[in-house]
Image 1 (cartoon, rainbow, N blue to C red):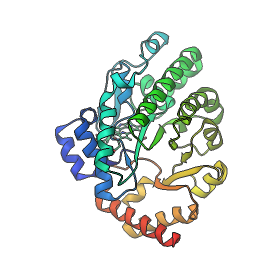
Image 2 (image 1 turned 135 degrees about the horizontal axis):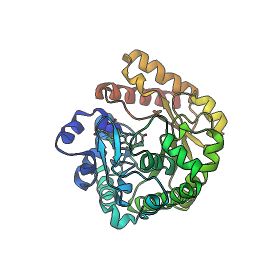
Image 3 (image 1 turned 90 degrees about the vertical axis):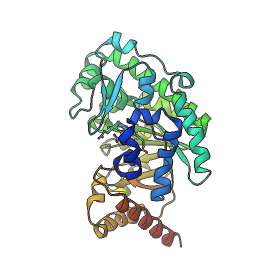
Length: 324
Ligand code: CP3
C-alpha cells in the first residue's frame, strides 16, 4: 500500500522535486523508489510504485493526485455518454513506463525480494471516476448504480477487462504476484456487493488464473461480506483490523491465504504496545502456512521509518523462532 510515500525520508526527498505521477512515468526513478522499502526497512516483498489511477489516465481521463487528498478527476462520469468515452486500455501503448519500470525493478532487486504488481478493482476505480474525488458517503456512485444500471454494468465491464489486460501485461513484464485493491468496497452491503461488484472482480481473477501468479484480493471494511469476496476470487484475502484475523480466516476457509491485519494507527503507539499488537496478530494466525503479515491498510503519514523497521525486525524474529 502507499508505503514509501507516507514516511521514508529518502522518498520525501525525491517527492520534493517530482509529483507522484511523474515518478510513476520515469522508470529509473520509479524503480529506485519501488526498491526503497526492501532496502531500508527489510520488508519481504516490493510493491510497484504506481497508483491505481495511472491506467485510468491511460484510458483518456484527465486527473491529478493531490497530496493529503488523493485522486481528483476534472470531468467525472455522470451518464452513459461520459462512461462510453472511457477508452479500453492498451497497456503496451498507454502505460509503457509501468512495464519498463517492472523490468528495471526486477534487475535492481536481483532476486532479493519478489515484486507485486497491482491494479484498482472496478468498484474502487468507478468510485473515483464518478465521485470525482475521495468521498465518505459514496452517494453519486450508489445513485448511478441504482438509477442507471445499464451504464453501471457497462462501465464495470470495461474497467474489469482493462484491468485484467493491465495485470496480464505486468505479469509478462515480470511481476511475481498481483494485488487487486478494492479499498472502498466496504461501503456496500452484501446484496449490493453480489449484484453490482462481484461479477466484475471475478472477471479479473478468472482472466489471471492461467498466469499462475498468486492473486491477492484486497479490501477494507469487508468483514460483513468476506464470503462473497471469496466467491469473487483470489488466492490471498487481505483483511483489515476491524475483525480478528483468526475469525476472518475461519470464515474464509483454510484453503486460502490471508494477509493482514494490524491497524495502521498501531504504528503510532509506543514500541512495546505496538509489538504486543503485532504479537496478537501472529498468535491468531498461529504459524499457519499462508499468512502474510501486513497492515490492514496503508501507512499513515505520521509513521516513523524507525518504528516501521523495528516492526519488521520484530515480526521476523518472532516468526523465525516459531518456525524453530
Ligand atoms: O510504494 C508505494 O508507496 C506504493 C505505491 C502506491 C501508490 N498508490 C502511490 C501513491 C500504491 C500501491 C497505491 C495504491 C492506491 N492509490 C490505492 C489502493 C491502496 C490503498 O491504499 O487503499 C488507492 C485507493 C490509491 C488512491 C490514492 N493515491 C490515495 C487515496 C492517495 C492518498 C492521498 C494522501 O496523500 O493522503 C494517493 C496518493 C499516493 N499514491 C501517494 C503515494 C505514495 C501519497 C504520498 C505522496 O503524495 O507522495
